[in-house]
Length: 192
Image (cartoon, rainbow, N blue to C red; front, top):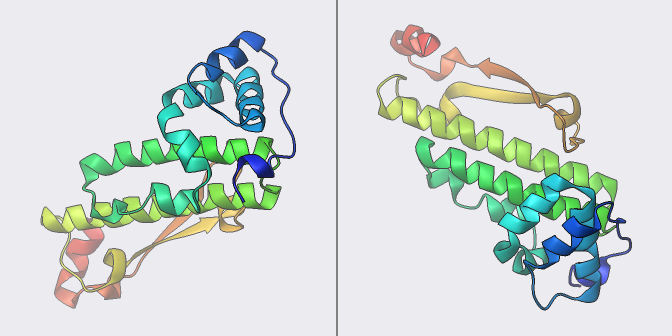
């Protein structure tokens, strides 16, 4: 079933001018989707900005599957310089898609918080792996067969429970398995 047909509610725009302005970036929208976009933009300057900047991406993306997996696909191959901008773009898009699904009643609260948590988990994992790979390439960290250089990030609180909301901080505990390294490399790995 397409996104528009699953919309069950609409936010009432607080700022009618902002709502109308947002719709100028879209053409040929289903009436329900247009009403959702206008209401969303009229209630949130932040989301109105995302609607403007992501208009070319949004309409086709709404009817596609798992937004987190889709927007972070193949990020493992990125280097540290490219990963930051790619994650920021993914964050904007996932936040917008999720907000529309939330405000339009397309998703239940548990789906909203799980998507936000899934993205935080994916971003943490990617950042850790890309950083470790970069440090090994720069010879700042010894080579190891261990996954992610023996470093583990455990999510606590709302992230650990899969209940992040739009403004949640992520609480992480970072653990290091020194036995992932040969005995002669353990001191260098600890220092890195």
